[in-house]
Length: 152
Image (cartoon, rainbow, N blue to C red; front, side, top):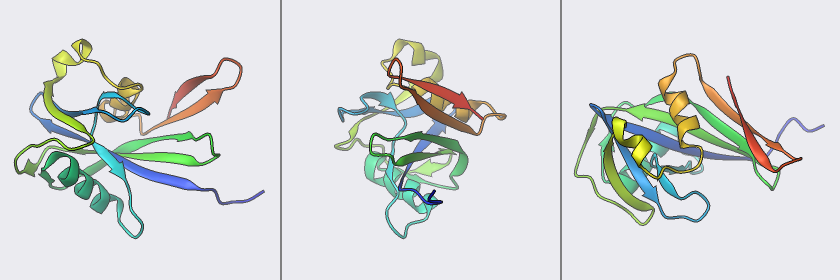
């Protein structure tokens, strides 16, 4: 059995400003709805460099001192491991703008239940919010085709 596997590395970032959280209304078919901005880690790029670059590209903001909050991961249909590094930041500068990835919105945390969030949004929010949760790992239930979330 091989000790290596193909991995896709990505990162998301929760940007907070008091009770407001920056969300992106994603337009891609594979994951539509309001969620945290982010994207892929490029070759020879550190994880912190990747999230700083992605935030600048997608939001126009320069973020400072992002902290790793946890990890989301799941297997893909192509037998790859899809890893999402979850960063959090409350220090930033610049003028907010949207990108081709979707419109950017500051949303008060109390208004989340009234919004159309992306699938799995609240699973990711749990990793951000709960200090004793560092990872969400999804396993596929072959019998009914659903995904089961496991928190660690």
